[in-house]
Amino acid sequence: MTRRKGKFLLAGLICLVLCFIWGNSMLSGEESGAISGGLLAWMVDTFPFLNWLPEYLLRKFGHFSEFGLLGFLLAWFFLLQGQRGFHRFTVPLLCGMTAALTDETIQTFSAGRCPSVTDVWIDTAGVCAGIALLYGLWYLLKMIRNRKGTNHEKAS
Picture 1 (cartoon, rainbow, N blue to C red):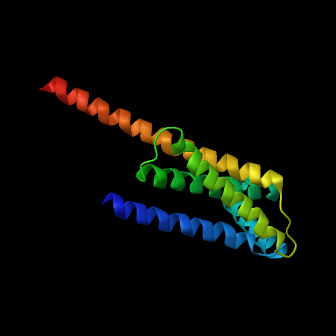
Picture 2: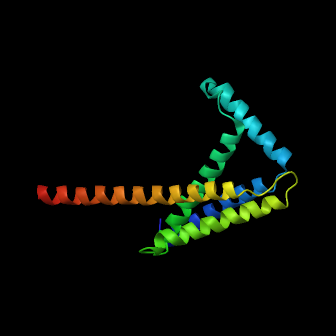
Picture 3: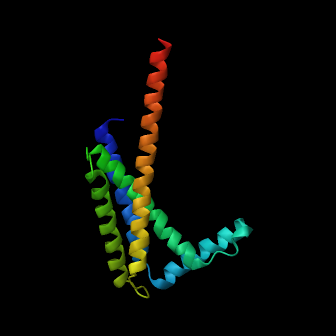
């Protein structure tokens, strides 16, 4: 896959993740609660050892994980764009924080929902975790490639 196709694919995935996040924020409190409750019931039926898990914690983990995915994709996208130095962390972080603030603003207009500063912090922590995961994997792959190159040179 070419770098240009990769950028378009990542941009499309970012848009899909944002549609998912913001689409869930447009649901009423009742609809959102029904989805969370149904997911929790399925998880407890499937994995009985999770019967201690409160719905509140499941919802917060959902925020963290969906924004973690967004942070990962944003960091990858801006890496392909050529972002270097400090900007390779700050640009995706600011984009992710903007998405989190937009998410909570959307909830202001959804029946039975209200914005939460706590959720913005959880979302931002998820974005940071996604960025850290991308660069951790990138660094690991770079080290593996360098090691293979070094071992190949020794064999020659």
